[in-house]
Image 1 (cartoon, one colour):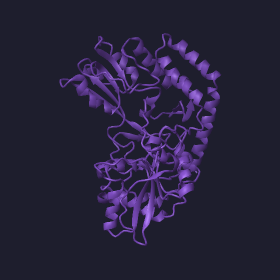
Image 2 (cartoon, rainbow, N blue to C red):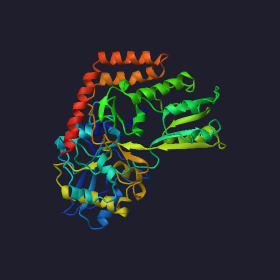
Image 3 (cartoon, rainbow, N blue to C red):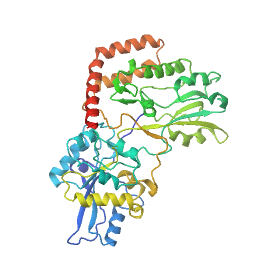
Image 4 (cartoon, rainbow, N blue to C red):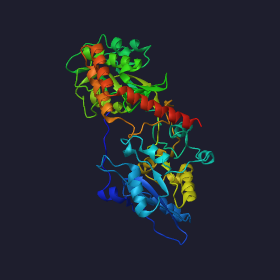
Length: 442
């Protein structure tokens, strides 16, 4: 699905980082300033980032204060988080704590590169054990080559409302047709078989693109390739049975007219609005719920099916301590207290807590239906991805799902991919996967 980049800091930040006013009002001679590298944290109701936290630390007589250093890449698509921090530290000295911000998600693997290059110190099992609020699945999903370098973010990927949702409009789909539904696209053809379409009715509103569906099954997608949980290897998606079966089902539904709107299977458009149009089935995430009443009115009934989300590499919003931190012990003590002291962490606004990976509303993390992917811990870095092949893989999906002759088009796509070097790319990625697994098992 389309992602958006929020521009959240000034040009000055891109050059050297900027310091937020954190209300450090007193400076005893023995004060320790913990410099925390974060993304831009928006003020809320006039509250300055970390200001209330510093006031409480002052009231307690603590000699620790927090100074937030804000970072963002802005409009520079080539900039990486490590590059930005290294530039800042060269000019200003090392930070004490760094949170890998969520807006860097498009730079796949930059966090892993940072950790593997030794920027963050490794966490010990003893340190891990002191963060009692963090479920084990978060620690496992945050490993890099089998090691822990950051305190995982609680707010990322843990919710009963994360997963793949099928919404069946009982105005058109009888519930007795859903008794044996197991959550595959293949089943939807039979379920939709009695639906009569018209200009005001979409048969299937499908809100995923390319291989997004792999987030909700043990298999995975990285760098445009398909990672099978059966073989535990990467492959050309258009030679993988599961992907071909899925795309063939989408093709059949499309050719039968159930997707009677401008769908793009390679790049679903989040800006599409169908508020004047009814639907029989909608496939997407939990956010669809919020528009159902606007779209369907109050007199409607939806039968909902929810399938698990498989967590991988949850490094975004996770927090670590640089190896060159001037105050590593104080920094770790502060992190541990923020995870254990509900009153202290509660002084931060919701936006601040989310940005640094603390639980929202000071409640225990709710894992919901989240599961750990068998590929958690392995990230294909952007430096390893063949961008031209990835673009060809992604763009071919829409072409295949709309093909008049599915098998002929599938063969043509595979010929084009082979000519472009797909086999060599797959072999390279599998070598990287094997090396990662070997390091993780040491």
